[in-house]
Image 1: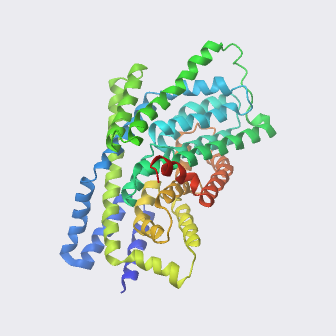
Image 2: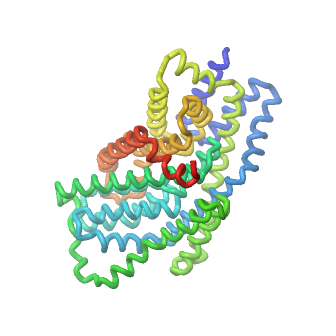
Image 3: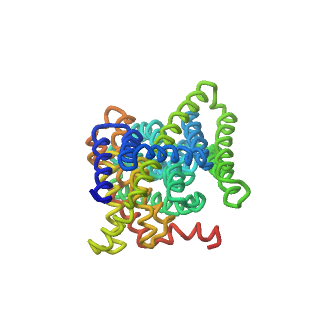
Length: 439
C-alpha cells in the first residue's frame, strides 16, 4: 500500500468515526495513534507524546481561556442589555431599525468576546424576544440573529483566528487586524439588506411607537453604553498593536477589564463568577484536547508526505489552477460544516490545506480570513448547519426549524457575496495589517 493510499485510508476512517457520533478529539486522536503504531511500531508512541509537549510549550495558548472567560463574563453579567436599549432608542424610528441595531449590537459583542456562540446566546435571549414582541417578522429576525453571531469569529479578538494562527504559524496580531475590515464589510452588507427589505415591505420591521417620551438626556446616557465594549477593545488592542504588551498580556487585560466592568455595573456576584469560570474551564479543555489530537494527526500526515501527494494530485495529475484548488477547498469546508464545528474543521484539514495554500503562492493571513467566513457559511447552510440547531435550541417555541431554514438563506447569499469580494480584492483583508506592521 502506497503512502497516498494510507493517508486516504486514515482520512476516510476519521470521517467514518465522526459520522458515527464520536467526539472530535477522540476520532482524530485515535486514528493518529493507531496509524502511528501500525506504521512505525512501538516507536510511534513518540508522536502523541511530542504533540503533547509541543502543546504545553505553546505560550500563546494561554490567550484562549482569557478570551473565553471575557466572553462568558460579558454574556452572563448581561452587560449587553444596556447596549440593546441604546440601539433601540437611536434606531427604533426607522423601519427595520431594531434589526439594524441588532447587527450593531453583534459587532460590539464580537469586539468584546470573540466567540460566535456567545453572540448567538446574547442575541437569542435579549434581542430576539424584543424583536418578536414589537411585531418584527419572525423569519427575518431569526436570520438577523444568526447572521450577526457569525461576526464573532471574524472581528477581533477572535478565538478561532488565535487557533488558526497557532496551527498555521502566523502572527495573531496580523490576523486580528485582517479580520476587521471584512467583518465590518459583512456587517454593513447585512444592514443594507435589512434596510432594503424593510423599505420594500415595512411590515417586516415596524417603526417603534414608544420612543416619543425618551429625553435627549436619556439618549446621551444610553450612548455611553456603547463606549464600554469599545473601551474594553481599546484596552486590549492598543497596547498589543503598539508593541507594549504581548498577546497573552493583552488577553489578560481584556479579561480583567471585562470583569471590572461587570463589577462596576453591579452585575457580578459569586454565583455568576463561578459559572463563568466553570464554563471557561470546560471550553478551554475541549480546545486543548482537539489541538492535541490535531497535532498528532498532522505529524503522521507529515511523516507520510500526504501534503506533497495532494499538491501533486491537484497541480500535476488534475492540472488545476491555484484558484480552482482554492475554490474546491472552500467548497469542502461548506460540506464539512454540515456535521462539524469551525474548530474541528480547522484542525482536521489544517495539516493538508495550510501548507498547500502556501505552496500555491497565496497569503496565509488572507486565507485565514477566507477560512473564517467560509466556515460560518457552512455553519448556517441547511440542512445540517451547526448554527441552525443551536438557534433552534435557544429560540422560543413559536419559531420552528423550517422558519430557521428559510430565515438564513438570504443572509448566506450576502455572506457568499462578501467572501467573493474579499477573494477578488485581497487588500480588503491585507491593507490594515500591512499598514500597521509597516510592510
